[in-house]
Length: 410
Image (cartoon, rainbow, N blue to C red; front, top):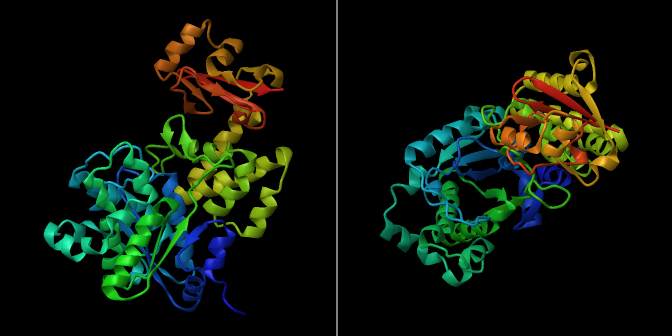
């Protein structure tokens, strides 16, 4: 029986967005072990959920016998990628960039086997920082047309607000990465988010011109919901993979509370659950879909943190929302769906639940970070509670450190 081609696996699970040479890439991935790379610029001290898709791709590729290079952008981070951004990236010191890169490595090691060169960790600071400007422009800059570069979306989006030459050089740097990795490790493919398409094409062109060899590129879907909006934004900001920035419980709760329409897609992209089971779970309806959400939340929390963290988060969530022995003493009030309507402010809900005596008290508490909804701190005094925020028709409000109140949607 012929072994399944990883190209088909990535396509079936919904990762694949664009590919430079579909048929050639599929044939290549089917007949040999391919070295490929994905770049991660360490602009923060933790990876966030947006990076997780790329990590899953590396892991799946390795499972099918291919070799990932996880490239830390120690050099490119000093410039900043203009893709999908409205402002120039803040300048960071080499020390901070290096420490952030070390934090990234800890996550990669959970998903990839680095023994015996089965996967490689590289840092583009090794070849970008020693570069001489004049040599670089003669060797690399000569191969790039400014007219062509300006048609790339990543630059067009910035033209009105002003694009510095500093940022304009990013495409040359990333293209040079592909060329260096091709020479050093025989790297034949670059993967990235769909916003990296122009940069990947630049690297393919540069490698072809300098080495006379064909290399390939593939981009993957960004993690968006059914409305096309980026997922992973919480009241506290980004959904981080570091437990010190997003607790395993908050992480679990995010996936436990996603919209019904997004369950199947997230199961396919964020877990290793077989696709037959993914489709079965995604087809559940009504209250049954909550079982699929629990499985999603458990699996993703287990992968990013640990099975113990996933079990603890699941037990805590069930205790708070099930009305079981652990939470039977929590004061509860009821809210009709008619009263909730299209949404109700947290402050109005607290007034109705008699948790506060006045709206001004609610505003003061929120400004002091003294109010949580479903264990997420409310930072906006105008924050709205929607029907989707209720898990099994229950929502938990916490006032201060010790006052819990459950609201039942009836």
